[in-house]
Each structure stands twice: as C-alpha cells, then as structure tokens.
Amino acid sequence: MGLPRPNDTLTFCRAVIKICTTKKVRLMKKFSSRFTIGVHILSLIDMENGENCTSEMIAGSININPVIVRKVSGMLKKAGLIHIRLGVGGAALAKPPQEITLLDVYRAVEVAEETELFHFHEHPNPNCPVGNNIQSVLQLKLQQAQAALERELAEVTLSEIDHDLAVKISSSQS
Image (cartoon, rainbow, N blue to C red; front, side):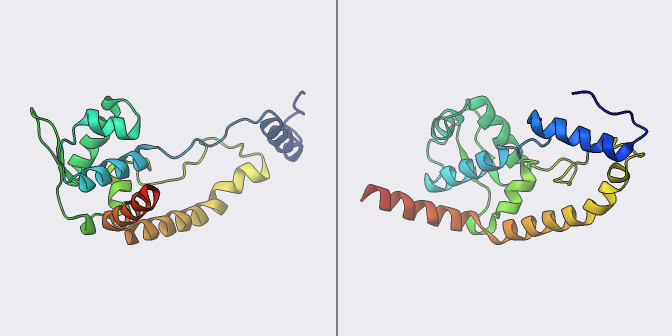
C-alpha cells in the first residue's frame, strides 16, 4: 500500500495509522520488569529475614539470571532500600518493610526515564493537524495519569505486599 502525497496531510496521517494498525506495528514498549523484580527481591529478603539471600538464591526464585538480580539489587542499594553483604553474599532490608513503599521501588529501579513515564515520539509531522497538536493535548492527561499511579504506589508498603504473600502462600499449602 503506497502512501498518498504529503500535500493532503489528513489523508497522509490516516494512511500512516492504517499501516501501523494493519501491520501491528508496536508503538509502545512495556514498562520495565525491573519494578516487579525489585519488589520480588525485597519481599524475598524480608520474608527470609535476609538469611542466605544471595543473588543466586534470589535469581532461582524469580527464575532469571543472577546478573539481573545483582543489577537491580545495586539500584535498590543505591536508593537506600537494602544492604548488600559483599564476600559472604546476601542482603538485608535497610529499613523496616512498613517504611518501604512501592513508589520507593518504582523510583529506585528507574521505571520511568527522566521522571516521565510516557515518552512522546520525537518528530510528529507539523503539517498534519493531529501531529502538530497531539503532544500539547496529551501532555496534561499523561502527567495526571502518572501522578495518579505514583499516588497509588505511595500508599502500598512492602509490609502489605508481604502480608498478602504470606496469606496466599498459606492458603495454597492448605
């Protein structure tokens, strides 16, 4: 399917959208899994009281490469959420689980690049009515959505996650 000449910008924009949707072009990548990996690491450390929480043991629980665990653990350490014991290995929470929120983890593992969760495509066509205006129309809505997400994450503590995990584990063993 050929694109129409750019002199008819609305037709041009519609054609681009049609090509992207019919060929299932992926326009947005998933959020980083570092967030869920970070929460998993913290929950495991807390529930195991830091005993034998080496990157190999944690990686076995998450079912990923220990190198990824070490990378995310380094981010959690830098954010002041865990202490890592070098040499003998292992990790411990740096503060009580009721003082660690999901927002702390979200920020520690850099889910959003440069504090902005949503990234705009960089060069929309200024001759297209949609391309020329989409960023200014969406900007406030996306900032509001990110703020709502961050408010919700700030309300959930690691202690709550661990409690829910303990209930789930207990009920599955019954």
